[in-house]
Amino acid sequence: MQANVTEKENEDEEDRFRRYYLNNWHKTWAAFNLALRSTDDFNAFEWCFKLLKSVICFGYFKFGLYKLKLHIYWRSCVPVLAIVLIVVVVVSYFGSLREIINERWCCPTAGTEGGINNSCSRVDESGWCRWLLFHDAVVVYLGLMIIFNFLSACFRSPGVVLAKQQVKDSEKKESMIANKRDSQIQKEYIKWSSKDSRGGICGIDPILNIAREEFLVQNYYNFAGLSKGSRKCNTNINSKKEQNQVFPINRETFCNKCWIKRPPRCHHCSICDRCVLQFDHHCVWLNNCVGYNNHRAFLLTLFYLNLGCWYGIFLLYRPFLEVLNTSTYDHGWHFFHDNKNALLDLPSVSAVFSCILRGTNEKEIIIKIVFPFLFAIGFLQAIFFRYHMFYVVSALTTLEYKILLDMQFNNLVEHSSSRVTPPNPFNRGWSQNLKNALGPIPLLFLPIQVDPKQLNLTSKVIAQKEK
Image (cartoon, rainbow, N blue to C red):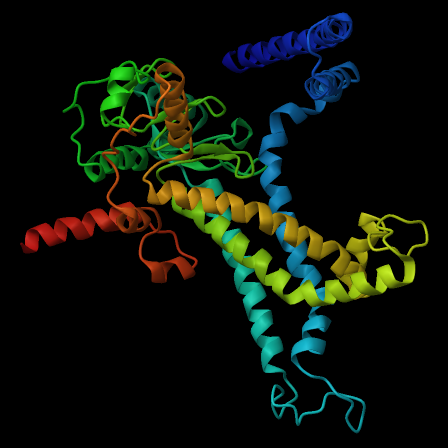
């Protein structure tokens, strides 16, 4: 009975969205016509975005595509795209790009039988090239570390403050589904649906351990040097007086959406609808929030992604320049041309994939695809990684840094002079901030999950006992 009611509510909500977006297109088009005839400034880029969004939503509901539930499941499918791209790059290396390593690093020369000359110092007696084995191992290692840390950040809970009512409702729901002998397990472990952007990939849902989440909250209080409930709860996190004293605020706050008291630096995520410890941001690529418990995995994903991209750029930049010089010498600067020999005149995606898997594609074509892709991703990820490392050494999150910039801007507008930034009570110095975020350096290069804050807290307690 309860399932039927829930299903009916979902259908009513979908019908309400369908009517809204169908009418929204007509309203947007009418507003666009009025804006064209208005004497006010006309922002062409803004209206192009509004019209594009309206027509996509109109077509999505008009032609019945909403029945495929793409608006529900698309977020959980985004991580699959990221993993596929990583796997394709690694496969393309072993399918075609490995020959470039052999030509550049293994100094192959024609021998008596037309093979590799074993007299080369880089080739051992059995005919194996040491540098080829080295690059193979590095590519496999970087690919595995990227995927491991990516999946860790995707499936690992960021650290969530659960309301008592949430726990009771979840226990009640699971106990109705589970058998009597499994009821105790269901009370301790609850599945979070990946379609709600709470981690997981395409129906592979993460497991919420209630006891683990409560431990994370308590551990967070201990790490911050606070005792739960010992400080007065601040119900208005945007209080100017409070922000001018310290930032981030080192007091408990109250969530008006979850109706719970939460630790300092805990914020409510509007996408996955939960309060996350030390909330940084909600990452679409991870289908999960980045917070207290998975921040390290997120940073290592960026680190190894940068390392992998720039390592590939280092291997391919000379072959790419050779292809570029040859193409421009023969055909000029024709990036897109119909002579099938221009720089970016590439075959279809399906043809490229099939050739990569068979290993029969020309390496020049793979270079034209892989090198620009690696350079674009590496350039963007280097910028992201630089900003996130700046936040880490400053003991701030992405959200807190944005709030701090807004505070400084408002001070400049109100007082027309610079104001001193409020002291950060969570700043332990850049070195300790790095240790708190990443943990011991040797463990960064191993595919293991580590809680750096718990390690630092344990070492701190041991040091105090020894004194």
